[in-house]
Amino acid sequence: MKKIDVVIVSDAKNDFCKKITENAILSCKKDKLVGEVIVLEKQNITYDGAKTFRQEGLFSYNRFLNQGAAQGSSEYICFCNNDLLFEEDWARIIISAMEQEGVNSACPYSPISNAANKTDILVNSGIYYGYEIRKEFCGWCFVWKRSLWEKIKLDERIFFWASDNATAEQLKQHNEKHILVTDSIVHHVHNGSITLNTLPIQDKRILMHDEIKKFNRLYNQNFFGLGKDVEGKVTVVIPVFGNMDYWKPLLERASKSALKQTHKEINVVINVGRNLWEARNSFIPEIKTEYVIFLDADDELDENYISEMLKEEGDVIVPTVHRHFSNSLVDRSQFWYTPKSLLTGNFIVIGAMIKTELLRAVNGFNDLPLYEDWDMWLRMEEKGAKFIKSEKAIYKIHVREGSRNEPSDEMKNKMFNHIKNEALKRRKLT
Image 1 (cartoon, rainbow, N blue to C red):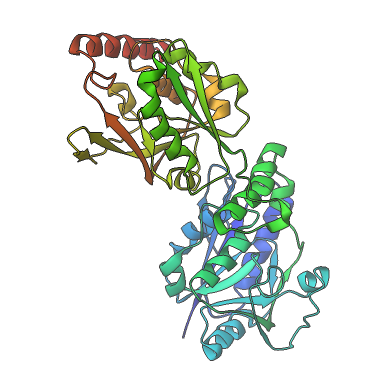
Image 2 (image 1 turned 90 degrees about the horizontal axis):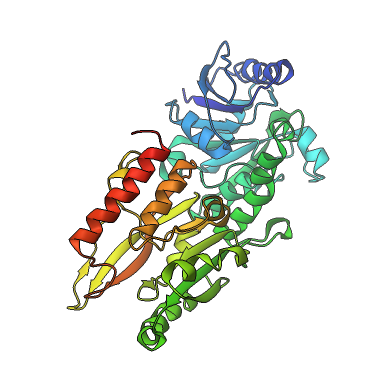
């Protein structure tokens, strides 16, 4: 007998919300094909008749569902909200339809949801193929074969709103057919998000407006007409100081690498200062984009650099570094850090993509002759910044004899000790 695990996402902030989750658990288990019921709960609550796993951090629908699915072993998985009531034989009917049609993805039918969304699809009217959101595909309850989930997983880059859109797009990308089964009945009682309505305004913005724009960018869509949120999202600042004749050929190479990005909608600024500190810092108040990248004038960005960076979510997105030497050798060995190791040295290149608000929060770079980027990363770390590595974003360093990349041992030791000692004092570790 084929079984189905039911994975429920819940954020029961009060007794009313807890009761809703309890009703979903009780009603789904009336079908004998239900194996495990797994609840991913934001609050410190456990439920009778279900495995309960506490979830922390920002509400993340797809991540929670993936974590819940990993706890089961049945051949089918039902991914769902907590505000559902399942009718008798719901699982048997939907599994039978999937077997008959030879598909790996299906949704049950909700009379409430279909009436509210005016789909013109009636209960017990057959099987409908398609991916239209809130019509054939409903993110509040969908069933996958476990083999499909193991193959592609749910897209965790999308936290909440547009998560159903992302799942439908994943199905299309993998040529997986999807059906609506109108005689498998699951009532979407509230036909909306109780969880979303109880969140702080800032979290609502992240989970709604920001998520829609992220989805549009990742899947090349224009959901809600909000666009892809890429125009003016990134500013590339190329700081220049000193002898302009010296910098001219190097600057031409650097600026071309920024202007030839496959991601076109960026701002590229060449900022001139009396010294490197001024060339970097003086433009910070003028930045109007969410992110900023500082590109040293003697370095380059790979053509997919920014498009790869924008696929990641964090305060500082750290690239992969290729070091190019004058003898045409390229060093592709990488450094990365563990939470405690930034104090042991600078493992992050200057060209990391930084959230502008974080850059301003630490007042940019300090005026130091060396390792000023390391000093800034340490101060960002102390602000709780989230550092994320992008494996596919390539930053090209051109190592030149006599450049700042090859300082004297005396200077390196002096500045290393100074910056580390200052960080230890701020962290009260001395």
